Length: 400
Ligand code: PMP
Image (cartoon, rainbow, N blue to C red; front, side, top):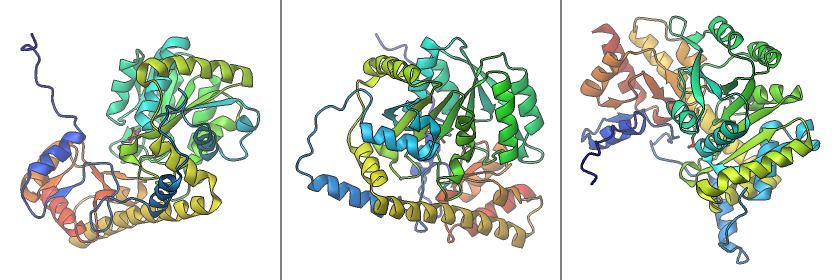
């Protein structure tokens, strides 16, 4: 009865790793996956995470009972504080409701489901381009997905005029997805002045911001700096949705830890929204898992562990920034044609190289370098030892 089922294509991002794993070459390089690697090319578990896990393991009072539908209360409070700021008036006035969800993806999905049920506007504007999962998440939740201009291939920077025009002509009340920092895949973020203009435009048209914060602290190395865009939108007392992920900044990828916060106008609305979020979550995954969120809560509530975390987080961010510099220098040394300054200007895990799909194909075939066909490379997958191999490949691809 299932003989009609057709073979689905691999996920365009995760499929890169499938192809990489099949390649027997010793020099192969996987720059497709968005996960941090050490200088030795190994996955990293933060010391502070190991420490928290040990503490949890030693605590014999811990049991494996179900969590409440909204997850761990401490985790939720601390997560809201982390993204909105400890002194956020929205938190002090109890106007924020936070629910623990399955990492960034699950938080986006729960927020989208809520909007599909309870928000009068069913259209969400997402940047062009954006993380490939965004349109799928929102479409499946029942929202209608439209795009706004974001990236300008000629400058390899922000198409700010196009962005303002597209948001300016969006129907009043539309939802707008914003990357809080380190836009994926382009690595291009608005400046603070541009954020302020976006905020004014959005508020004047009652557009509803839905922030995706997948890289807080991972982009600049500073948790506060990477949250500035979100905090600007909360400081004006307007409504705002924020999906947070601890995949990158705490290296908890497979633990699936995240949170959805809804900033409301009043405490009363916040508690009613929370009651409806429970109705979204209950039939979706019933209640979230304990382990990852317990690690996060343990770290966030202890000032020493928190400090340790920020140091380890900054080391990851700095290594990525240093890889940008090394790749840029390597291309300059080779005299590779073109302006490669965008490599050092873009921020976060990815560089949007500007290489086209033919050049990417060539680099995979001839140099065993794997990346998504849009020319996005994960800087976290690169090391001082592999940067020259990548620079050789890019040089060959653009000069052939
Ligand atoms: N949003 C963006 C922009 C991302 O890049 C990612 C991870 N690639 C996510 C959300 C969600 O990741 P996760 O579900 O693993 O937290």
